[in-house]
Length: 377
Image (tube, one colour):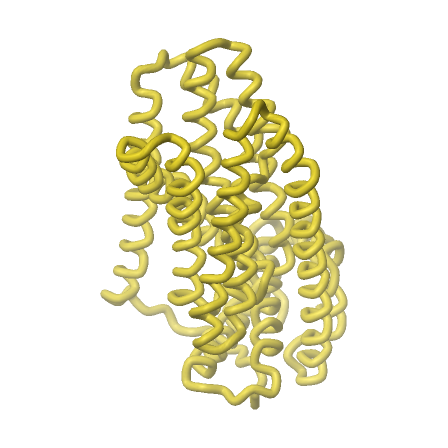
């Protein structure tokens, strides 16, 4: 793909257009609606419980979710996804996916039985609703997906939101029966298997991340394949918890789920390391093209260098300047991934549009650093 140097001018300020106002209104409205769904689920599931019981369940449910979300955010450090997208993923899982699943699974349980609901309906419905957000990112905001890590992060955040609300319901009911039952459920769901839901849905995320850089056929088929794997794993997990006296659950956990989790963790770490190699290679190209200095590239090539850059600017010029540097780092990283994605590929109209937006983003970020530090742009 033929590209030119990044422009250094700053775009003039323009009043918000009608389209820009719509672009803000609908995401906010969606977040509010999804949050209301989560509140409805919690209200329906715990409405007859004492407030103290619900509060205890909520506090305990926050412990594993902080761990799980922290892991996925750590995985996302090289090219952080927009905060609004990550929040939307979590709230979708906590609200839309949980409400839809509660409705469908309850209907199936009434029409058939609890086993059918847990082993057939729950995996099919829950993975479809959780995966819908990740697939939506693929088709509506594909430029946000730079590879497998991004798909894993979005899937993990959706599943973390779902597990958070589900844990409140399970813990609330268990504590209402007996305090020891409540803590037993917390140990199993919160400490022993906190990554269960994320592990299922991450298979969809991996498929979506791979499909993001493929053609239309792959974007149609790969998410379906990831969904089928997620459903199968989820069904096997639920069935093992219902079969026998618990021995099947323990055996499945130790002999199957732990190795699968270890394999997925290894894949995520390998992909994260691959991201660093991509960034380093593209930064070298950008230095040769004169888009940034060798010193900037050296700092951007490691997370330690990025932190040192931000820390030194904060000490010398304050927090606003440090935020400007972080924005500049993110903009250059996104440009590096773009160059990797279209390296040697013919640039279509959509790619050229993305290129223009990224170039403008780098230009604005560079100007922001210059304005906050008093340096020349």
